[in-house]
Length: 40
Image (cartoon, rainbow, N blue to C red; front, side, top):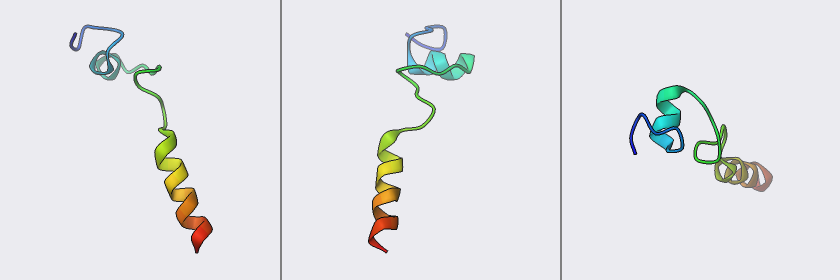
C-alpha cells in the first residue's frame, strides 16, 4: 500500500494517473470559490 499500489493515492501520484482516489479537481474548492464570487 505504497507507491507500487495502483489503487492507492500514492500509487496514482507515482504512476501519474487519476481515478476515484485521485480526482483531477476537487468539488469543494470549486464550490467555495463560486460562493465567494456570488457574495461580491
